[in-house]
Amino acid sequence: MRFKNVFSIIGPAMIGPSSSHTAGAVRIGRFARQLLGEPPEAARICFYGSFAETYAGHGTDLAVVGGILDYRTDDERIRRSLQIAEDSGIQVHFTTGTAPGIHPNTVRILLSAGERTCDVTGASIGGGTISIRQMNGFEAKCSGELPTLVIEHADRQGVLAGITALFSREDVNIGYINTDRKGRTGEALTVVEADQVIPDSLIGEISGLPHIRRVSFIHLT
Image 1 (cartoon, rainbow, N blue to C red):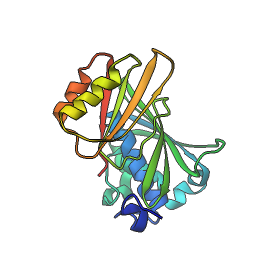
Image 2: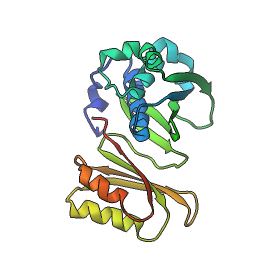
Image 3: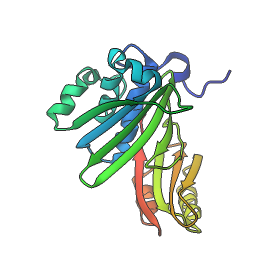
Image 4: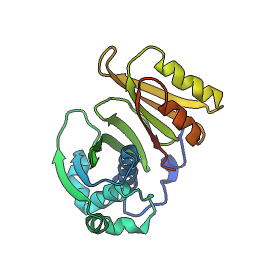
């Protein structure tokens, strides 16, 4: 069996009893926080499967909120994340749900800050690794293991070519790219995972391309 990273073998440095129920949950929460791009004012968190059954006992609620506060997996403040969120004026609401065929360690996070919102569904798949399954209504997937751009844009000819050309010009290698769209010439979302840190200048140039609506930078490591 091949392992993608050290998390798959020994798990990450972390706060909490379980890499699946705490470290992975922190990383999903942090992914949502960075996708939003600013501190949230409200968070709605829905747990599924074993998360729904054990989230309070295993500290998964603390972990997800710690991630929403942009804490790393080993941050001691995770133990107090619910109180810190309350003191910061963040309204947090927990629910549980069911869905067919879903991974047992799945959470959906909806964040808002003013008029800006984000909606992320992810699964903690073991050893602190995660799989993001849905972003803002799109089924564009990624692992969160590499520096990542999430690009919301119109589905128009040349948009992807323009994005990849800028990566090539800046000598930033694309490790993975995935696009989902809501219909021909409609709304689309593209995820790009890079093999190295993505410079701010490149993010700015992509943001300025025609038909680009929003660009978010995710870097969990």
